[in-house]
Image (cartoon, rainbow, N blue to C red; front, side, top):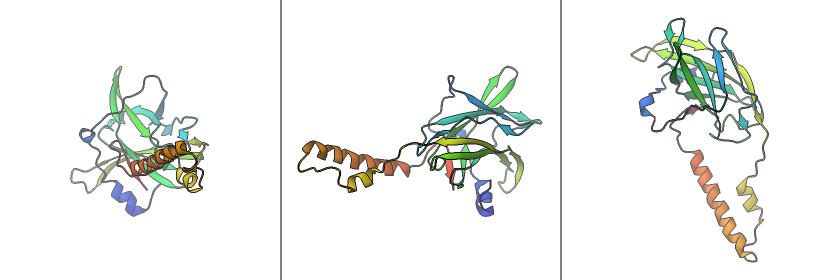
Length: 207
């Protein structure tokens, strides 16, 4: 699950500085957190990740040991490679959080399920990739990959507001109440289009 060599190389230089995050995501205490077994490289997968065309409404949490063969994974860049139900490949760059549990530290890794993942309903494959760069940023000196895991995006209902309005469902001259609703729908459509283009402070999507 790798993009083109050029994209793959350029993504190594994504900088994830937790100090640059202007807000935080709370680790849930009432939701499942799925395990990444670094010894076997297997990832525990939920039954489903989200619903068709959801966008940032679900955050799936994973956890892994901070140290693997005495190598500290904290501070490494972590990305999630995935192939959606349309067989399109994407990468989500995320920032792990460290929590001390008993006698060792655990990395908690959030995956906000974004639009590219929920573009189509059906099977979705994903895997984790950790890496570290040299201080001069010119060499990759550490790489760790997991095996692919499989989950799914559930079917939903998607009605395009623009198509709905253009089909003349409302007659504002005969139904004044509907004129207000039509205006509201148009405003919501414009707001939705604008929000889709905004940058998200928690993660980066690379196509």
